Amino acid sequence: MSTTFTPTETRRSDDYIESVMGTVKAKNPAEPEFHQAVQEVFDSLRPVLGKHPEYLSAKILERIVEPERVITFRVPWFDDQGNVQVNRGFRIEMNSAIGPYKGGLRFHPSVNLGILKFLAFEQVFKNSLTTLPMGGGKGGSDFDPKGKSDNDVMRFCQSFMTELSRHIGPDTDVPAGDIGVGGREIGYLFGQYKRLRNEFTGVLTGKGLNWGGSLIRPEATGYGCVYFAAEMLKSRQDSLEDKLCLVSGSGNVSQYTVEKLLDLGAKPLTLSDSNGVIYDPDGIDREKLAWVMDLKNVRRGRICEYADNFKKAVFMPTDIKLEHNPLWNIKADCAFPSATQNEITAKDAINLIENGIKLVAEGANMPTTLEATKLFLEAKVLFGPGKAANAGGVATSGLEMAQNSARLSWTRKEVDERLHKIMIAIHSNCFETAEKYGTAGNLVNGANIAGFLKVANSMLDQGLV
Image (cartoon, rainbow, N blue to C red; front, side, top):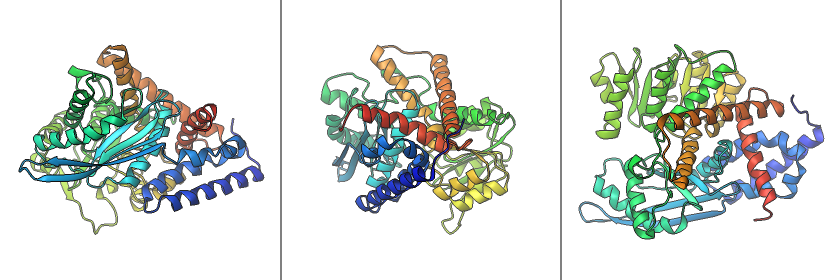
């Protein structure tokens, strides 16, 4: 049953949101991604705030947008030639109301304070939705591991962790991987933490299976996103069977999205990287996926090589003069943006809608602009926001933390079943919350409201801290 709101309640919440949003922009200038993430959540909260004046008097919004702690530090290291290099390191400890800070580390030249604050803010609500006791955080560096030797990466990671180690711990802050931080980087980071602190604890997730990692963790974000998409389609008595699917990116999330799509009978058609897009009209089957995994995870090559190896595939190089991404202009049923933030613009959304897209599930963090999201919702496209659809990664990180705490290792089947149940529960929570607050079918509102309520109520319980 939906809830109705009086004009007075609506006006009051609108005024409050506009006031806080103005303060956010004034206090955090030149951080457009952070503004975007906050605006999206705030827009969803209008009906909630009208019914809960206690959130206004306790200044919950003002507190929830302000990180509990922002850590920045320099990272000096020697490269293979013996030259001194200097990068910048960050950790945003955003909110610990429901558990220790939890969120990835991103190593990429684009990393800056605004991007990490947006990611940390999103992480708070994503972690809330998982049903597991985890707060939200995010970190990283403007270091670029692409093209670097293993020794370069090791020396950088050791320097980075030398500073970060004093701020994290299994009951304080538990980082994981993100863009540019895979199994290699997590290994070097964990080794240095263990060396400095003289303790073997579950301080990082995404660890190797031999030293505290969890089965399914590498696959979890991609698998979870597809499980979420399947639940979305089920709400309309449909399934992924025989669906044509567009997947962007070619890293961890994209690879395992393709794998789970194949498991559920769908036909993935695309992958991409910063150099361009490959489109395979025959579909990316298991043999081709294994080739991509070797290309990206072992040889660290570029996706254009796919078209050289599989003759029916077409490679479309990145063209910055284009107003759209050609990947999103291919006729398909489902789209899984799994590369980076704001990769689907309003123009891309129009192309997808005109080509008959039925579903968009965000494998990356905020890959769709606010304008594009609005277009999808208006067109009644099933839209799974990242904080819900890609929560499988951090959910399985939470399961890895549980295994570390208990000194246990669960089977692949057991972890996969737990992940599947969590994604079903997240969809159900988002779906029912959207209906309860008068926006049936709008999973953006459902995810934002459901995630917010748990965190906000915990903050109220714990007093002014």
